Image 1 (cartoon, rainbow, N blue to C red):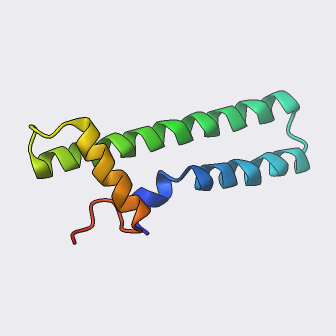
Image 2 (cartoon, helix red, strand yellow; image 1 turned 45 degrees about the vertical axis):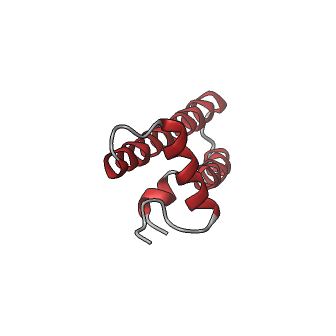
Length: 91
């Protein structure tokens, strides 16, 4: 699994948040500060996942030409993920 796939994994980000939140409580961080930190981590996870997803789609468009539409590219990328191939791996 590549770093690109790891960073775009929602499971990874939920694990990070699930790990950090109890640590904040254990170290007596105020409830408001803990909520703000968890909110920032959640926002970062969404942003990183979106950026990497758009990057993958743009790379596919370059590979297949601008004439290909988003639906075709997204369908192929999704199928690659279902097949267990890394996104963008050469066959």
